Every structure is written in C-alpha cells, then in structure tokens.
Image (cartoon, rainbow, N blue to C red; front, side):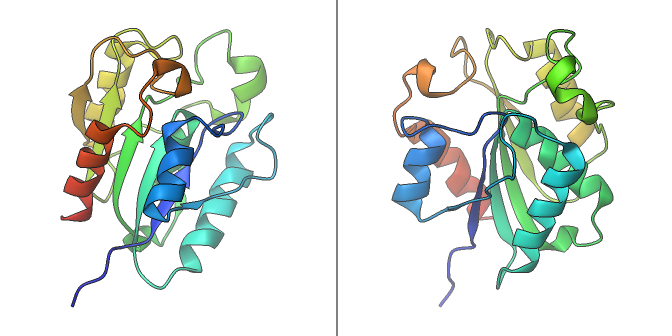
Length: 180
C-alpha cells in the first residue's frame, strides 16, 4: 500500500492569507506550511535553512507547493542543498521576480536569482498579467529550472485576489506531480 508524500506549503513574501489557495490546500490536503522567521523581510539564507530543517525532519521525500518567492526559495535551496533527494517534485506558482527594481529594496538578498536546473520534476504555473513577474520572465525561469510551463491566462499573481478559491485546476496539477 502506497502512501501520499508529505506536502510542504511554501508561501512567498508576506505569507499567504486565509483566502489564498495555499491556505485552503493546507487545510484540505493536510499540507504543512513551512513557517519562516520573517515574512516581511525575507532573507534567502534564513529561508533556505528553514526549508532544509523541515525537509530533514520528514519521513519521506516531499512534494513542494510554492507560490511567488516560495518558487525562488525552491530554486535557491536546490542549488545549495546536498539533500535534494528529500524532494519528490515541486509545483511552482507565480514565481516572484526579486530582480525587479521596485522589489530590490526588500528582496535584495535574493539577487542574483538562481537559474539552475532543478534535480526533481517540477511544473511552473504562470499568468499573463502577473504584476510581480512577466510571462517572458516566468518562461525564462521554467526553462532554466527544467520545469513544465503552464500558462493559465490573465489570473494576476495567482493568489486570493485572483478569485481561484481552492483552485481545482491547480490541485489537478499537484496530483500529476504526486503520481510521478
């Protein structure tokens, strides 16, 4: 009998509120949110260390469900960790672009962004009108990370403001990754 892998929820800068699909999935799917020490001033090294600690505490390789800067966390962690086998797959949604001029003052520790292939399967979901990452840039991330790119059209930052609710289409993408 096979069991489902642990699901880790990786919110981005400022965390994900109660109406965000990540929060709904956490409750619905029994996922575990990786709590960061500082959601408002995220430091890449701190976030990487926290993800490493959580992954090492698990009984089996996890599926990561990342949003915004959580996607950049996955790429940065994978490039530095010697424990990448602790991840089965990753769903990367609306990757934040910390190299945008208006974001550099708060997200400066994230530059340069990591653009290396991920050592596990991944799907990157992007929107055509994300205010924090253009579709062109999201496509560059997908290509660099070796991720399957899924364009869901004009859905903003694919967050609570996008009106997705518990986002069944996203859950279907997650199930595909779990089945790998």
